[in-house]
Length: 146
Image (cartoon, rainbow, N blue to C red):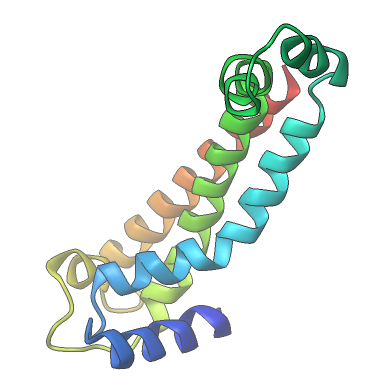
């Protein structure tokens, strides 16, 4: 959460995005990119080397082997990693919305999520984000388990 707020503030100041949803999305993408790349790398390393060597021996290029052999074989792991990363981003978005400073340039979507503490709107918003994060995490784990 500290990285998210600091990144949001620095990106807002440096790029002139001033507390917009785009600034928050970029910060969350940068925050989750290392996790996503390690999961995708793990899925690609699970592809049997024999399949890749056979493709290369038959004259396919490295790019062709990646596109026609490795990615189709690792598709479930890559898709599971993407869905889990989406769940992580949604889960990290809620605290940022709650503690982010209010700005006049904040988009309407952030204003709608910012209900006064203790109001029914705040409870509904928190429950919705929690359920969305749980659902995407469960879907990602189920995809990875196949």
